[in-house]
Length: 64
Length: 260
Image 1: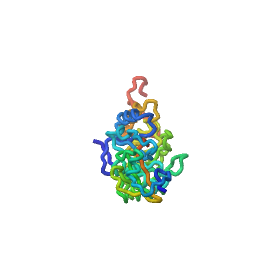
Image 2: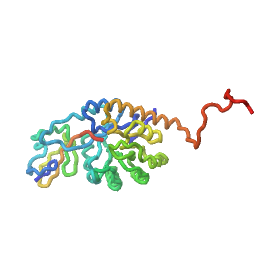
Image 3: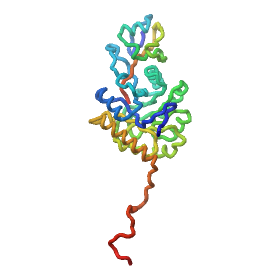
Image 4: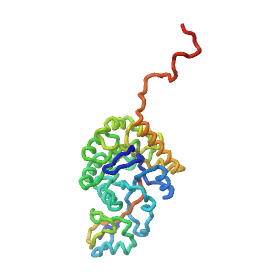
């Protein structure tokens, strides 16, 4: 299983960018964490997902 | 020009705005404009993957410099993750460091904050740490090289005002050995912001007091004026309080009494 935004998903073997594009994520507007390494979405390198990967997809929100 | 610096960033406004809690982006934009703020804090949160449509915050905050925070972090490691993501989202290398373990009073964890600051500085961040009004911790953070120290006036969002005044006075006294001191959290009225600027502290960070006002832009303007007034008063050199009254009119020549 791959942990995507805190949920376990069977995505092993898939390319992360393809998965995010399928989900409708606008990569220009997000940052992506892959196992503690953070990338601006548009600079996300090719990454074949493997068992136990932790992926977080985030954007800016209002906050103090 | 009376400016101040956060690392290599020179700022004119001494009022930093938090962007949270506004009822809509329009009120937030107007408040930022009325506050004359050059910097607004933002947080980092998960995208809703079931409906990932963007919310337009970046457009709403155009023209103001974004300061990502680590709100939500309970440990140094969690703060590092949020800081790295904030940098990837904004392209900014500065971060408002918040490490808050318990939700009841939202008080910052001094040990985790110090650990996180050290690690973030090693990664090239400009670190603006939210902290209790603890001068010893402030000096430890300053020795590490943080860009500011940001002691609280009262718990976040409480609006209680400058409850930590006696301890903030020590920050003012030790100002020369500290990076800029930004009072963050608990300011509920413009007079509270004026008070900390009058003390000689460098800036104030305000969110709830403006966002939850009935008229946020008007309150933002009031805070701007108060911060400007407080700073001007500090630079003007306030009088020393006396133990007793001192008449403002001459005591001689009052045309009422006969000379003895």
